[in-house]
Image (cartoon, rainbow, N blue to C red; front, side, top):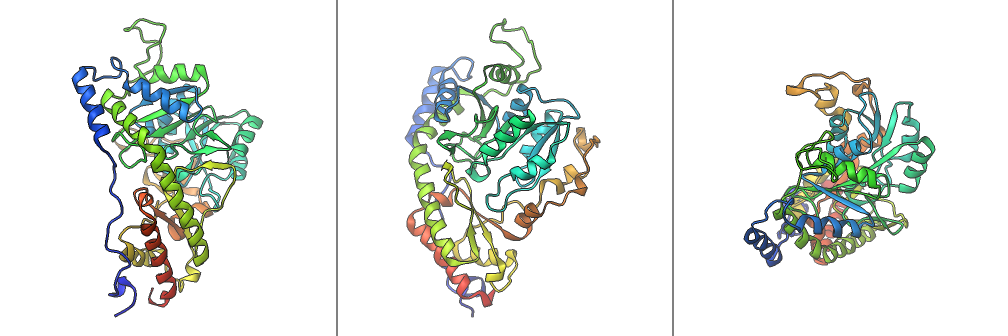
Length: 408
C-alpha cells in the first residue's frame, strides 16, 4: 500500500469544502416582500433598479443595466458600442469561457483569438497589438478568475488604434485596477450572476458603463428596442426582452449585502495559498501585480510543473490530489479555437456553417495550449470560502504529493 490516498493511503481530509450558494433569512425575507408586493417584474418594482445603482457605485460606474445573463450582457454591450458589421473583428483571449467569443458571433462580428500571458492567464497585450488589422474594431479583455487584466496597456493600445474596449468581467465582482472597479474602465463591461458565481441569482448579469449614449442603447437593446423618451409601444431600435425579475433583484441585493465579508475571506485564503504554494516548488501561483487592488478570486489559479513531481502528467497529479482533498479542477480542457463550433464554423441554425474570414483550425497558441493540456489547475470558488484549516489541508496535500512524487 502506498502513502498517497490514490494508492490506498489515508487521505489528508474527508470533510467537504463549503457548499454553494450561501443564503440566509435575508434572501427569504427579500423574496417574500416581492411576492407580497405583487410587483414581480422589474418594470413595476424597484429591486432591480436599486441593485443596478448599488452595483454600479461599487464599481465606480455611472450606469448599470441588468440583463438575464453575462453572455447577453457582452453581446448587448458590443452592439450598444456600435460593433456589428460582419467583417468587423473583436480580439478575444483563447483561454476563457465560450461566451466571450460566442457573444461576438451573436453581435454579427468576428472573434480573433490571441494568446494569454502565462504569468497572469489574462490576455497578453503584446499579442493583442500584433493581432490588430484594419478590420479590428474592439478588444475584449477577460478578467479571468477575477484577476484584472492589464488595463493600462489595453487602454493604451485601444487609444492608439481607436478601438472600443468591452470588458468581460463575468468573474470579477469587486475586482479593481489601481483603485477603480473593473467593468467600466473600458467603454463598457459585463458581469454574470449565474448559479456558480460569487454573487448569484441563479441566472442574470449586468452591463456597466460611464458612457451615457452607450447606456441608452444598452437599455434599448435589452428592453425590446424602446426609448426612454418614446411611448411604450414605440420601438426605435433592434431589441429583445432580457430584463431581470424583481425576484432576482431581491436575491441580488441580499447577496450584495453579504459580499464584502466573503470577498475578504476569499482574498485572505488566496494570500495564504500564494505564500505556501511558492514554498513547495512546482506549484506556481500567478504573478503578483501591485496595480491589482482587489481580486474577486472566483477561481484560484496556479501552474503545475511536472518536472518537480517525477514528470507525472497533470491528469495523474490531479487524480492524486483529488484523492487527498476531494475537490480540484483542471480548468478548461480545450482552447476556444479548437471547439467544434469554431472549427466547423457552425454559427447558423441547426449548426449551419457560416463562413467567416478566419481559419480557426490554423490557430496554435502556445501558452493557451500549455494551460489547457499541461499546467493549469483551479481551486473553485466554494473552496475559497473555507477556513484556514481547509487551506492548510490543501497545502499539506501538495507537500505530501511532492514528498511521495515517486508514487505518481
